[in-house]
Image (cartoon, rainbow, N blue to C red; front, side, top):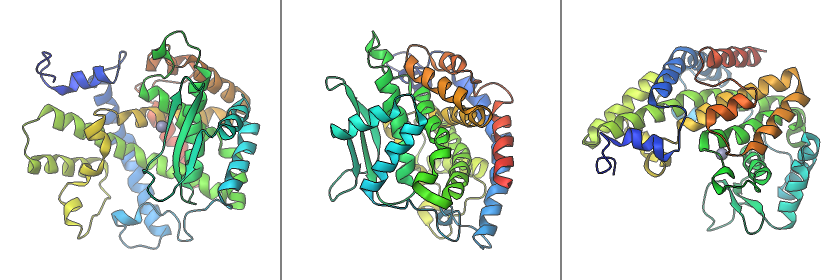
Length: 353
Ligand SMILES: [Zn+2]
């Protein structure tokens, strides 16, 4: 496709298909270098602490999703209870989140529980003729259910706020900006987590932060790998496996696959759907996370002001490119030197308390 259109390879075309107009692969390459310098060393330290907490001499890849020997905290009720609690959460967050949530519930725009035969995953979409967003999820009684509530409602709320924009392209922003609304709400709803987890709310928040920080090098590894494979479409399967292996050594040096020969041979990337269906998407989660962490930081200083900043960002929809939206919300661009470093320091301090 890229060659027919006169590009040397798919990379630049991939950026254009993602509708990125105010940054390019050089910005992203510099950002990845900051991740290697600032985040990877912190994650090595955090993974060492996690292994100690789990009482493991050497932590294997399959141990990594567990953060606590007591098990990860679980929400304290069934599906109906969760929906009631979520309404309480959105009421105290303000801005009209509760009105939207109850309307979505009444008009059956929330398909949350898993059931036999239902497709996996979770997403938010919009049904413009119906005038409401729609959330699809697979609740299974774990802490992930709560993350889905806040994450997908962030998307839904932004979409609802922007539904009357004059151009349809403004109703959803580009995807890195979209994920600021969703991940931002995950962090802004921390004070409400007691509604779901009771006395274990703090434990939930720490794990949320820890897993978010641990995601940064993984998301960046996927992005780096995509650049390599799309620059070298002639690479053999073995060469692609070697490329991923190198990414794991660089960004996830603690990862141990043991006797899982497929993964140990550099083939874990094959399970990452985005690489095939939405090339170059993945860094968007990482860029958005750096912005969401800034909302978290701002809320700790002045919660009301941070919420207003957040609502104002949602109302702008996609009327500007990523960096302009971020700037207008009073946040710093993740590409600016020192921003990632600042967030990493704050996270480290929070996790050590
Ligand atoms: Zn999302």
